[in-house]
Every structure is written in structure tokens, then in C-alpha cells.
Image (cartoon, rainbow, N blue to C red; front, side, top):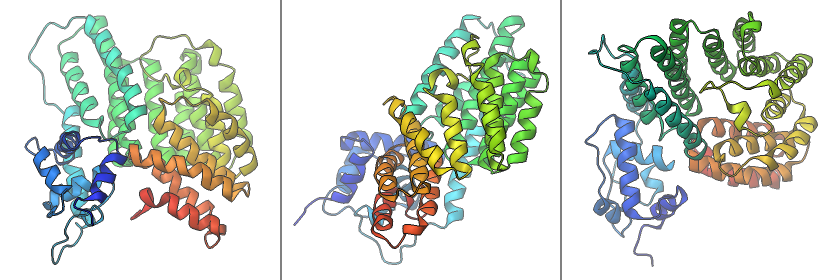
Length: 415
């Protein structure tokens, strides 16, 4: 008979917390961000008790933090369920998340003017180097652990912009827009489209203040990304056409961003011809990307960037065989460091395999995607896996459907 809480221990190891001390520290940090409460603390001693034979029962807010961090409620983590326990209502969970959003959003709404100070131009390079590190960390960690850090740095940049002048101010505005866009992306990846839209709006405001046509185009593409997740194809096309209205003034990278996003809009409206036309035109510009702008560099970092967009659009259009063929080539080139992106690609690959009437292959592909979803807690990846379930509906009562349900159980329960 076991004298320890094996369910909690397994959940801890699944998210990479190798020791109970690490788990206590990570849960403390997660809770402080989630609850916007600097006093929230879980000690190593408390965690050791939880993994013991008599784990007791955590307070309600701690239960919510455990659920957000580990993807399980306490009754599924080996805790002793008290009489009358009911999971927090959805509005209680949403209240916690809203508090976090309000706390993070304060970074964009700091009252001013700030006290005047000298702003060294070297700070622009400092923040740009930090930004590149955040992009890399996002690929490793997913959104939840970075939102607080990146928004706090945005707040500092905003404060410095209020004192800077000339080229230093313009450089900080450009960098600040990149930080605001990243916060928006992190919220979008976390599944909070309202918060994402707010931060995309902050990006657009900074772009308008900078009067930089590159930044204005970038901000419009950012807004189009949210419209894509909302399934509003015509809205995506409107925003991308606005970005490209004066395309002669745009550097190749911004034009590529707008064209590939417009292709997503075209796929949402069922226009396969426009998808290929836009992706092909963007591909012709890739070799010309030579700017030093600190944002929008996915086309440089991501192997097969535009073919990834094409494969995604084909999947959305229901072109299973074409998408399956593309994903077969693309996933082999995804670096191990791009963990979350690999998970998203695998989920789309699995859906394409299912559309191509290869259900066994789809289940095999989904297995790795599900493991990555547990690690990163990316709402975007989980949404892709839920889409896969729908594509696999014809096999839901067959062995392939039952195997898929087992594979996806850790990330889709309660969805």
C-alpha cells in the first residue's frame, strides 16, 4: 500500500518540476501572477505534506492555482476531498483571471507624465536583446510564465519614452511596440482573445504615435491575427489590405507578414486560389528581408515559415491530402527548441492525416502533440487538438477513436 500521494507526484514530474522544493517555488510564482497577490506562498514543507499519505485539502484559491498550473483539480491530484466540496464556478475562475489581466494591463495605463530623467540611447539595445530572449523563452515555456515579465518591461519602456527625445524616443517607441505586441501574442496563445485585442490595440496606438509606416503595417497585421482566431476572414482581409495599401513604402518583411496573414483570411472565406497566390508572392520576397527591426522576425527564425502558413490554410480549407503531404515535410525541420510551435504543427498534421483518411497515423502524431500541450498549457495548441477530435468523429466508436480519446484525455478533460 502506497504511503505517498503518487497522483500529485506524477503531475509534478509531468510539468518538469523535479523536486518538491522546485514545485513549491514554481507554484508560488504561478499563484502570485494568477491571483495578482504578492503574498501568495506555498512552502516546500506544505508541498511535502501534500505528497504524503495525508495531503489534506488546499484553500479554494490554491485549488484554482493548482488547476491552472497542473491541469487538474485537487480531487484528481490525490487530495482528500472534504464533504460538500464543489469545484469553483466558472465565474470564480474568470474573476481570478480578470484580476490578473487588470494587474498586467496597468502596465499599459500608467498615469503620467513621469518624472523627467536622462535616457541613455544604449537602453534601446538592452531592451532589444531582452526581447530576443523572450521570443526564445516563449518557444520553450508557452505563454503563462512570461506575461507578467514582458508586461513589466513594457511599463518601464513606456516610462522612459515619456522622458526620452529624438532618435532615442523613436527607438524606444519601436521597441515598446514590439513588447506590447508580444504581450498580446502571449494572451492570444493563452486563449484570452479580449486581453489579446487590448494589447494589439496598445501596439497600434504606439505605431500611430511613431508615424513609422513599418510599425503601422505591423500593428495592423497584429490585429488581423486576432481576427483570424475569431474566424473572421473578411476582417482579416480588410486589415491586411489596409496594411498593404501603400506597400511601396514597406520593407519586404512587413509585406510578407501582411500577405501571409491575408492568406489565412482567404482560407477562412474558402478561397484556395487567393491562398496560393498570396503565399507564392510572399515567398518571392523572402530573400530580400534585410532590415534590423526588432520585431516580426518569425520569417527568419522559423524553418519553412511560409509553407507552414500554406499547410495551415490547406487544413482549414479541408484539403487533407495536400496538407498531410506538406506537414510530413515540415515537421521534420522543426528544431527541438521550438517546443510549443512543434506541438501546434503536429496537431494540425494529425488533423490533416485524419482528413486524408489515415486515422491510425493521426493518433500516432497526436500523442506527441498532447504531451507538449501538457507542458506548455498553450490554449492555441489545445484548441487545435479539440479540432482534431472533431475531424476524427467518423472513428469515434472505432478503436482509433478510443485510442485518440486516451491520448487527448490529459489536455481535453473539461474542455
